[in-house]
Length: 594
Image 1 (cartoon, helix red, strand yellow):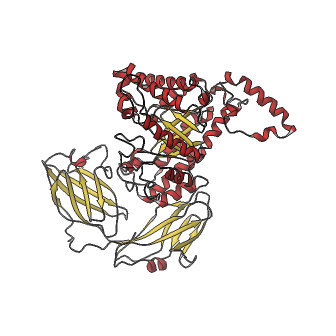
Image 2: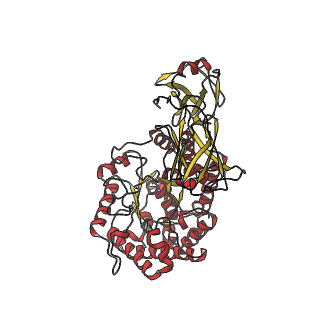
Image 3: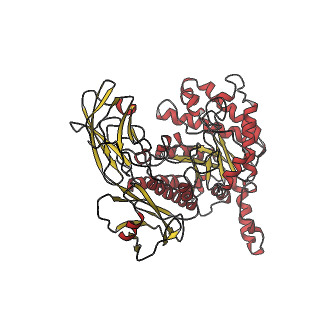
């Protein structure tokens, strides 16, 4: 095996001054004995430079981005799941946005022979090669892998057709190792994405160990630069429980290779990530899940000299819609998660299937989210208890206090449309509490047209800005309705308010609908608001698990704090309301610019 230090970044200044001769001697001795040093020695005071070099390599990948739903798409070609063809211009744009590394997920299933030598389609491999080279030309670190094959044929195949599945897997890596063996060390290989298998826990762990071990052997014996190329190994399902981390750690220890990187994925505390069970906000349970997860991963791997890449991260609710998690709560999640991953020396790679950075326009679908993520790469950003300030129609306007989460920063000013508000008369800041004065609230709001009247931007000495949306509202009104279990539509006057969540219980008090361990249903999966059409829509997913002939009491919770109760009953495919707000919906509110 080659001296890894000639292939990774390290401190060349060590060799530039005579006073460092002792350090040079120690360094050279370390390279001679390095092959006998394993990851188990990392916490020793004689920590060798090779482990620190792979950590330096991984640190340099920060931050990273995923080219999701392109080469990993299942179908005819890279456009099968709705994204355009990958272009050099697009890769340049990703690099220009500040990303230092790119993960290129690849599904090989339909792009290779099903039997025989399992030859990869040369045209498809050429397209992958082209994308890899474009990224390397932008000086990015590049990761390629075996992606959806994990569930398409390996999940079942490792148990039901072991020999063929392993042969096919080995054939992919044999061809890729040969093709890319002389490429820059900035190209790394990931053995498999989110591995999962049929069988007992013991069998599943053994299947993954066999795949990772076979992958390692194939690459390391393939020549060129592959003897020291960084290799990325996942936990089972890229999850992060103690047992899953332990299993991968054991594999890495046995491989005794200083150029291995571990990888997990993280999509947050599940109830918050999909908006279920009343976890509508970035609460302590959600925050503590980040802390516990990254602490556990750090202590098992990073602290023992094994770098960690967070190969994918985001929120699971994004699979339904990026608005499933309320904007301010979403921003708080990304701010803290990014900060804490970096604090624990975990390199993060955003999962983007096209929903974040538009591959046609090269614009961010949510610029506010991007600015928060970008700021978090280098510092903490300040947030607040909410980004919504509600004022109810008919109520007296009073001063409103908002708790700030300064995160070590100082608020410097407030502005509206670029015009600064006046400290003292328009607002005050007392320690970490921002007080909006009633005078400025009255000046900036108009109850004739309910909704967001103004956006007040808080500026800080460091980090991203924080926007407060001044929102006028009245109590929402839901009209009676009849429909079907395929999709039940409730005509709704939102009156400037927005929906946070929905509860569902039977008249007996028993929880109703899917996931009946909680009364709070999953946003977008079972219900969703349509502000453009003034409707709340209950999906077939909800009614599939509703009993016939029993009243179901729905409680809609709005972000203003308003709660509206609405009762329905299902008989076969027919659904109707049996109690509803009698308010007429003849006069629909005008839409306001948000």
